[in-house]
Length: 425
Image 1: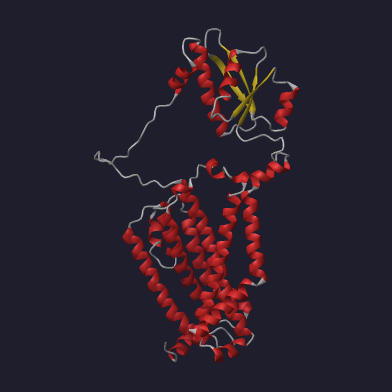
Image 2: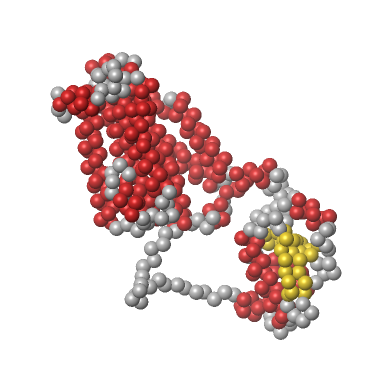
């Protein structure tokens, strides 16, 4: 046990100090930070970094050739408490000031309308390069109130008009075919985002750390260092020490990436990014994160043991890619099935793959996060995965024990079986 602890510590320190780990992690953090700050960077390059730049909210220009009641009412509506908008009147659509404001992105567009001879607004046209949902929502509410005030005149107070235009709350309840109330099984949008991020993060971490294990075992074997190591520590202590040590490296990398995401979300210009995408962290299921960690740990050890076994039977690092190809293909299936099924998590394919141990870590994560899954299905999937890990651990130990001292060409399955029979765990 002491020797295994030494191997774990040595492997962890060696990989963390490795330039490839540091550079890869740094690149991932930089790319992630750039991706999360692209909208702000675009504004900075356009000169909209907050110094005299357009503030958040809606900015509308309205054409009021001779001044009009509709324009004044629209400006008054924008000044109400809780309305994040500005309405600026201009005399004509070809006004130089309006063109400059459009060019500098200080207004989202301009509004032209014709008032009816009787009451109310006539035709209304909004001219904009990009009419966002926020602008549309403001215009719908504002023009509805302006139209109501033009029609009502002095007969109704602004409070009465606002109450008249206020939407009536409408609740919904799903029912089954027999009229009984059905349970709403819809998942919040934040779950889809978390599942998508975890799928990518776990796949990259498992594949990178798995390749680290195989490459380290093969390099030690090809340089004949293995012959020295085998005299100081048992092969099983070496294998499991490397697997656990690199597992800690993977956890560290995930923690660094998670910290980078949290740090970017805490930046002032990103404070409202979650609200802009209708994401509420309060709706995030804690059980999803717990199951995600459990499935990541189990999935890691399953693939790590396979990579360790593959690395032990290869004598040259040049042959490692070809030997590890079957394991990599299993990893790709494990990743792509849930990734392309994220919008349809309850298909038969996802259900079947969530019970196959080699594909269950990420497929079951998808079903837990955004699908319909029973508790017994989760338990059964985890049990099958645990049994597979124990079987692979026993098999990998026998392969590793015999493979690390077999040099020359890659041994065939028949040769491996013959050598493994001579060694009992």
